[in-house]
Length: 97
Image 1 (cartoon, helix red, strand yellow):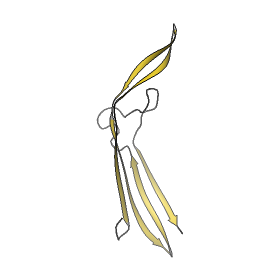
Image 2 (cartoon, helix red, strand yellow):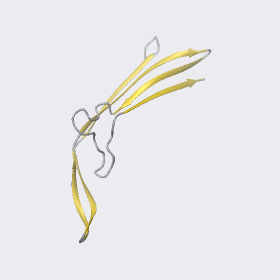
Image 3 (cartoon, one colour):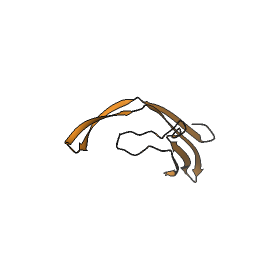
Image 4 (cartoon, helix red, strand yellow):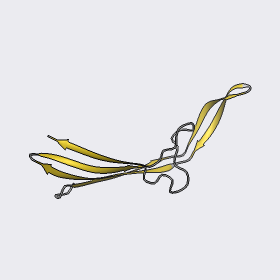
């Protein structure tokens, strides 16, 4: 936090490579299959500005989740059968009494 009211945050997480064993349906019945999931870096950030509203405080901010998604190939996947985890950008407004 700064005196002019600018707030910021950056978080970096690393998801290591994993091997998942899941049940899959085959013509012979249920079988187990291994799926290799590569590791990836997850970068999140937020930038906000706090400002006075009468005797209370308001804040507007923008946040980006998984900022590196797709920059080095495919977007990461957290589970072999799950959706890809793409980049998300969101805006927020909050008011504190």
